[in-house]
View (cartoon, rainbow, N blue to C red):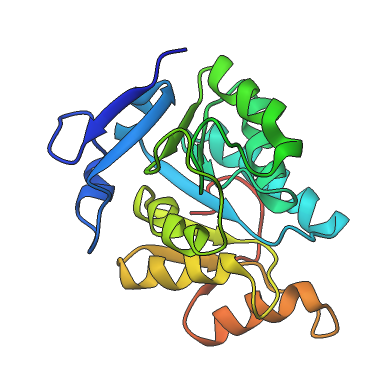
Length: 212
């Protein structure tokens, strides 16, 4: 499949993303670029997710895609994977935002998910050239795209040092609605989401339809 390059002033460029503080000057795209102009919500969280978090991520993705949202996440293992799969299993579309180029998919165990997304009406995007490798510094930078594309951000599970908290904070800065799933004070995976709620995120207390 041919890579499409979209620049910030092109008509196909996401309106939401164009209006953040530091939008990517160009995006490399594989798949359905029309999704960049549709109503999006991001579902993100820790790579070391629990069964509880995985269930919530997939169920939220299914319900929100039924409401017409395109699901955006980061192709990571854990919460991101279940967010993408909830949409795909529902025959709906999803966008994965990479922290590397298309020829160096990270994590490698999700390369089949990456292919499945672009072959089933979804979209993969990156601001990095195809040969660029994933490095730790790229992912926090990448997260502004995940939040910037969307009207709302949902953080499902996160430790206090989770990169998904960065996505939540960026969403707040960008004026997005940021939701966090509350959890047990004894769970490491809920420390980040509970803290995010204490900083002003909206507690997500239901996974039923019409939650946003």
